[in-house]
Length: 207
Image 1 (cartoon, rainbow, N blue to C red):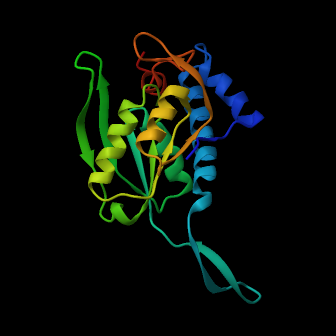
Image 2 (image 1 turned 120 degrees about the vertical axis):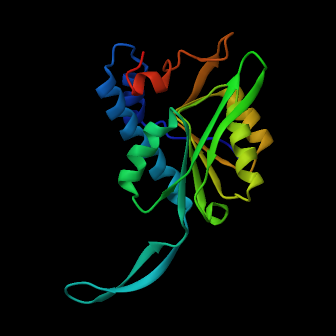
């Protein structure tokens, strides 16, 4: 399945703010939150819904309500900034957490935390990870979720490299990948360039 790009002019304008190294932490947080909500809106288009009859102040009417539980899974720690914004939009969502990173010394991924809510295997899962560079962390995250039975997986990112997107889609063609841009390249250290820098450090002002 190809990457779904949310590359409208508004998102590109906000991406420019995130890329700017002079954007202060409070502005960085606010813009990242706004973009995260917009990506979630797009990714939620395929959520199933069921009809329900309710009473308005004037009459009874048929409305649609989402009929599948939603689980947000931020990839720690940068993904936490995305989840905080989306939970405000969809407070009924359950939130799981996964701590995983690519260790450049052993050339492999390392998982250090994994906590999921009950019923995650039957839910619509939205993995929140601002950056997909090589794709190794994304693939390891999805592998882990599939191990516990998850099948309806959406991967939400701000930036992905074309290489990372391609390897992710080749490995997990059933996963729905959403991003604002796939134009960044990977430097010798495995980071996206021009990129956003260290998203977690910029978001939490720990540079």
